[in-house]
Image (cartoon, rainbow, N blue to C red):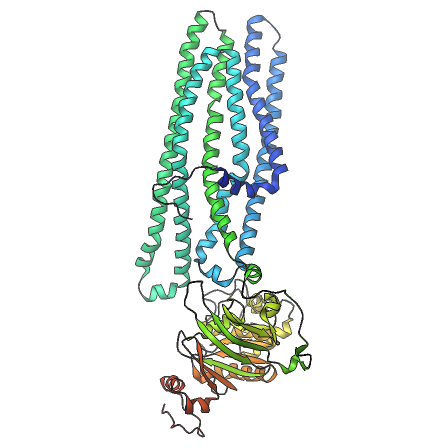
Length: 611
């Protein structure tokens, strides 16, 4: 959430409610911390009065034992109470941060794919990391500190009034001036801090993207240009941080100067009143102790107001993530897909006659979909049937809608028209988990998840045995490579640890381990050498004999032997058939084949393309 230039963000009740929503589950602990803080402050307020008793005892030849024991008790008990309060608030702050982080992490992973990919990943990471740090103090320590500081301030002023009303009036005037100036400065501090945090989030997003593309950046000799783009947000964040720091420094300078001026006035006026016999020396000393101690509640107020401002800005950024549409909410609120959710396999498909084994495993009927309410449809009126066995290949030029079809099948994207069916039953009757439990997917970019080779393979089937892991690694010709590593399956994966082809094979092995009903491959052989590609194609043929395989191909050599080839163009299905049939009947398919210099089969009526 960005703040328009020139505006100021005041601490309004609705904004405080956002912050309070994080602290509300811990009301009892906060109440205990407040009681401890007030007890500690009460002991601090009693100390000058007891000190006055010591001075009076000296002047009146009374015993010093009682006042000195009282001072010692106040010191010991006050220290114990302070320690208890600080540890309680520290632990409470960590619990608030942990809960906020857990909530955001789960929300990000449960959100729809378009909702998450709409923002740079680094920005979302910043909300989980740095924003929650700002929340730590604001949601726990700041409320307790503010109440305690206000009580301590008024308590100090009341006890000053008990000692001498004239001197109290002098101090009250200085405090009033400080309070007015603080009130004028605080909104500007909050605005500057929020803008700094917003630009810090952008910096995180840009840096994360640059690090992902580090090879491209270096190959393009763009290190300095990329750094400058990233540092632009860092500089703006620093400018706002400096602006906030200047205002804070001014506020502190005013506070210190105001209190010091009040002390000087108290000394002058107090000395005059002592000389006139209107005030005792012990009362003046006690009053000065209160005046010196007045800085504590004022500084605590300023610190906690500043923390509150920063925390509210962070809380608002964190709460913005509540607006990320979750997959469950997308299903239940989708006007196109109304109806109850049913779990479990479908045994009857048509009028109770045909069993599920006679119906296609997947079917798209007139499906239309777009990546936003105002976006142009990425696919229109697509009809597609995926049989329970066999290899279906989807080809077409870039932007034809091939990957969008996979997003629809995997339910990353919901259709705006038409419907998808699993086992003859509409997708709306199945949960996301039920649908995805039947599918396995290999992405084109084949990202590896953080962790080891074993972690990556077990991602979607955590109960697989080592024997099963070795079997799928052997299928994709990675077994020897893994055996040669020092830690074998427990070797950590990183961008430099494996090549692009090895990442593809790990992703394919992970998919094969699932033994899915439908295997979805988005150009799974793009980065493989000829021998390895042949082995992978053998895996695909073996899987197609027992289940459904759907391949998106930019290299048509990977799908020549597919049972059915679907040609897409401009979001629609243009043609379908076998390789030879499409060469004979579809001009776009011939152009795609010619562009990749693939020879047609000898029995094809079309002339062979040389290459």
